[in-house]
Image (tube, rainbow, N blue to C red; front, side):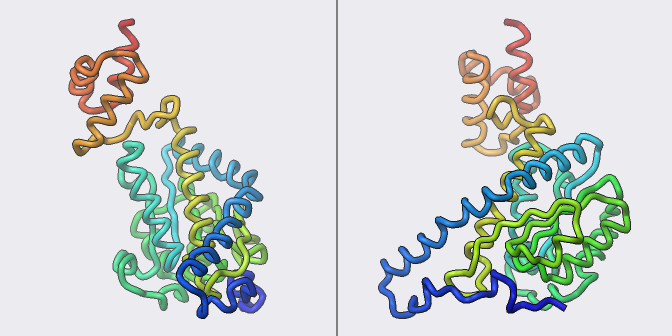
Length: 276
């Protein structure tokens, strides 16, 4: 049984005990001061984050899939990161999957009760044929969410690799997973409101994990999104500029080669550089 009083994400923040009496600018300053601690907390876990990047890239290179899971803010951040991999890196929708306790309705409507259900995420993993070749990234600020614990147990039963992203060093998830990533951000500005510093830390870590994995998976050229899907006017313009910057060609040539390459930026780059 989790002792919530011992979790740093549930502890009292003395720095903001009088925030209800502050002016608007004082509130903004107080929040900003607390937010400054987040990047340093994440920095302490870079070794584990790097291990996660390599493991996730190896999974993708072997034809596996990455599954994020969580409840509340943590789950929403996982779904957000997963959904952005498709347009950014041109991967299929099942390459990185975000599973949310309470289902996708919980993205916009509170389903906090689903956090306590050990099977609320496992059922979705089964539907999607989660297997040993996949990897599970379990996200929980407190590390106490039963839905996430259930998902980890199921992943281990399948023989899959597991990672957790938490903000408590004494998280229940730490001994359960292969790679525990912990960013101890301390008590929140509003006590227990882990959508704040903990959420920011989790978003930063997920950015690192997915970006690093996609780089190691070959979906980036230099620092260009070479497999980005140019699906609107802005992105088409960006694609043309990327091709020009990478190859030194003029925009007219970039447009022609991009069309010939069926809008695959990397292929257009290769075609131009191959004739130089």
